[in-house]
Image (cartoon, rainbow, N blue to C red; front, side, top):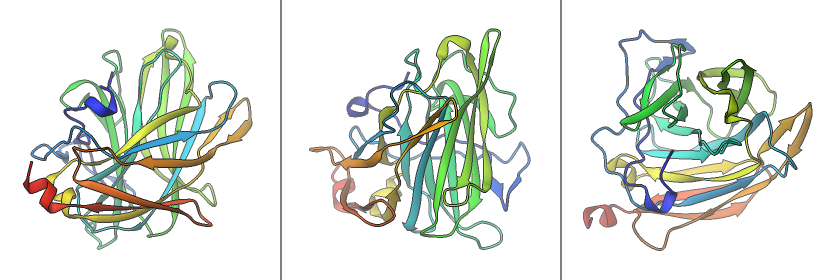
Length: 268
C-alpha cells in the first residue's frame, strides 16, 4: 500500500511503455519516469468525491490540461481506495511532443498490491521500485479538451477481479487510449466514492514548470446509475514542496494553476 501523502518518500511516476499516435511501441521501449528525479515529502493534495451512497464499479475522473510545457516533470494523480483497503492510483503527466510533433500526455494506472498480476502489454511488474503492477500509455491531446480516466472493476470471478483503465474524451465518451489492466484478489471489491490525490514534481525539472489544469466533477457508476460529485479541491502543504497552486471555478470545472519554485528546489 502507498504511504500516506504527508509521509511519502518516493512517489515518482512508473517507468512504462509509450504509445505514439495510438500505437503501442515495442516491448523494449520502456520509459523510466523520474528514475533520477527528486521526490518531495509533501505535495499539493487533491480531495475528490462522487457522492455515490455505495462503492462503485466504475470511476470517471475528468481533467483538461489547459497549458503546460512539452516536457516531463509534474504528475497529477488520483488515489482510489477499494473496499478491501488496497489503493490503486491513476493520473496524467504532460510529456514531450511525440514523433509526429503532437503534444502528448501520459496516463497512468498502477497498483501497489503485492498480489497484483498482469498480462497486459501496456503494463509491467513493479510500482515505484516495489511490488505491484504499473500501466501507462501516451496519447496526443488538445490543450483545453477534457479527458476522463475511466477505471473499472471490469470482471470478477473465481479468485481474481480484473481492473482496467481507459482514457475517453469527456464530452463525447469517445475512446482515446487503453491505459492497461491488472488482476487483484477477488475480495478487493469496488471503488469507494471519495478519496484524495496529489500534484507532484516527480522530476527536479518539475520545480521550474508552470502548468494549468481543470478538474471536472468525478462520476461513480454502479448498477447503471451515475453519481456526479462535486469539484475537487486542492490544498498546498505548509512546507516541503517546491510547488504552489491557485484555484478558481470556471464553466468547465475547477481550474488549478501550478507554479514551480526553482529557488525552493535549489535550497533542498
